[in-house]
Length: 370
Image (cartoon, rainbow, N blue to C red; front, side):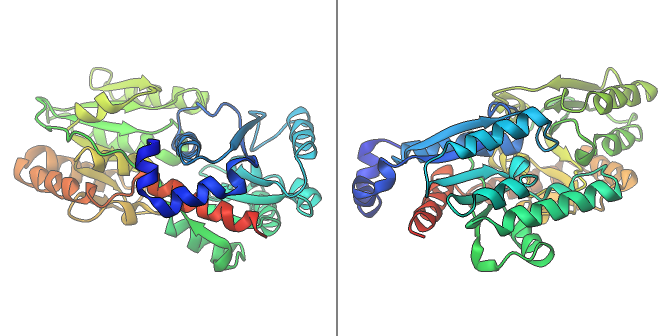
């Protein structure tokens, strides 16, 4: 956003010009490297950039990368960084760290104004034991209780926090992830390219998708798994072994993490990701912005992001239903084109990153006045 464009929004420009937020730092705490290639980090990066463009003096502070299971050094480092912040500072903390910072939140809530950024509750991650899930739920509930406000990326997450974490609805602000308008994918691949964009973790259910692929060897297609493959190396190796067990090495490509994946979307024909849960599902919104037909699991926020005229939603963890839906689109070009058109229409209603940043800026303004 240029200064000229900002001035055309006179009320916002005048406020920023006079606001103390233009000179008073707001702090944004993120665990690990903010350039990590996941949806949550992508949200953080883009939000920071847009808030800077709006004139906000927002400063990034990186915490240790062992969160959400911090070792002693990273816990001590987080404590020191909070201790060094000026009194009455507005401090936005990504939920990957804040969710386990209950004790620190209690220690500093009297002099710091916390905004908890919750992409989805940590306790809802797949593969946790009963005791670990209980501990994470209690810790996150304790931390959020100390926050001045809670920023969430979807209505579904807002409802979960209100119902299961005792968070008052007036304390929650929804700021949906934005998208960039651009070129639609032609969807004319021969053979069709099936694109999956997600970190290789259990929650993303690549294993279910591979099981579905094993039922489709009689049809022409190529699949591309784009996403970080070193977050859970054991799981990534398991997925590669599973592909080999079905002799699908020539069909399924593990692309790894990519900083710019626009070309992946543009060269795809169908976007498929059967996640077991999504706090929002930025990859689905991005796929829609490129006009791709979608196949996904009916879970979490996915039904809110993927309208019925743009995609097919199947029961979670159901490889047979997933295979049937893929076969349907692979063999029926008319239906695929209908969903492609539906995605193109839905793309027009996606929020922009500027709209996301404006919503967050207003929240920061309100918390700053408390």
